[in-house]
Length: 309
Image (cartoon, rainbow, N blue to C red):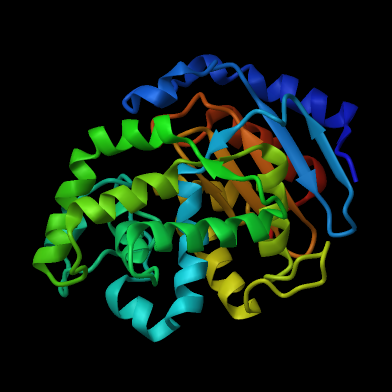
């Protein structure tokens, strides 16, 4: 079923776009600095297959930190809850997503949660497979199934750009290795992680993944249970408590839906039992979230009473 343009969404996009002037694209990753800061688009996917949209929803977005939710789901399926959370915590952090501070002060020295970079690197380390390529292909296959799109790939230019500039993530990996959270070659893990972050798709794909999480792991199009309901619920809980970096508390109060952002300007939302949302707005606020994307979700939540709380 094709995605229908919505006049109502167009009005909300127009209103939200006014804040893009206060944001900045993620030009510290050179390949992400080439986009138009004033872009904003949204797709909303319903369980019955209907889709409504506004803006250029075919524009490709690299997943960046949105991939952290999906790799967590795969690893929870690969391993088990006890194994994963022995190595990564469940607590929100008030620190920036790439901070090393809490690792140094925590005992034991494990990442506080899977949505900060240290935790995400530990989770990616747990993806099963005998090589970077095999592990990456397993993650990519899972993402394609969630989105119902076998053509999804990763952007080699973005992956290379991130690999070459991932000095802080390398430092986090060495810290994790020192404390035996990971035991693989750091360059190998950075290779896998940067490819994971560079997987790209459009807003429609993102909204399709969102609706699977919204429906506790069930794909409404095929009727297949892609992930167990308890794993989908764990992931949605992390999206609420940690999904918007260190602005997650404010986001929960103002908007109140499970969502995960990435520094490409993507946001994936999963309104429990109702629909999935895919947003692209590359101008970021000082926390690394899409500034217009958050404004758009705020308008949607207020107009349609979407908050879970």
